[in-house]
Length: 265
Image (cartoon, rainbow, N blue to C red; front, side, top):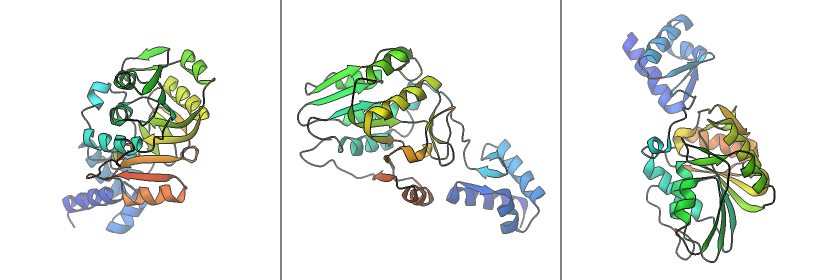
């Protein structure tokens, strides 16, 4: 096997599994660990994988704090489908709390409640969208505005939440990692998200499949602390299996899915 063939085999393996140990690659490809490390170093320089603690990962697991305008361009269809599934969970005369992020904004655009809906929101974009709906009572949290996410953080937001109770928290995240948990790129946002989790009967994470295997700077909570994840159909079977083992309810938004008649869209 040539070096090119070996490196292509490594990439094919990563596409299927997401990550792999150096020692396992050495055994599978019948070469030394030194050879595998050289291959991984070359592939990393080419931007095809990321090396971390004796293993190779298909993507860099550390997320950057990009602006919402940039994030809106990525996985737009998947986010819309996730938003449609999330909206189907809203019941008549419900009370919900929204965190921030582009997937939360996509979700807000899908909401069409029957009866009154009370929403407390950290997202300025979601508030602007929902403020146009007559059947939605929208409360915008106060505090410091994060320009990159167009959302608020800080003590003022946390103080308002202390006197509230919600059926569901819809939470957007920057990373979902089985070891690190769910995370974001901002410490203040992570703290606000934790306060939101305390006020809600159920925590629902809205995240496209690219968020799995990634970590933000600030941890929000362990995976065991959330109740449900809604993601797109590109999520790998191995991730689905691990989530099932953890007892986390998973909803996969299929590409051709229509909202239920008479509920929400």
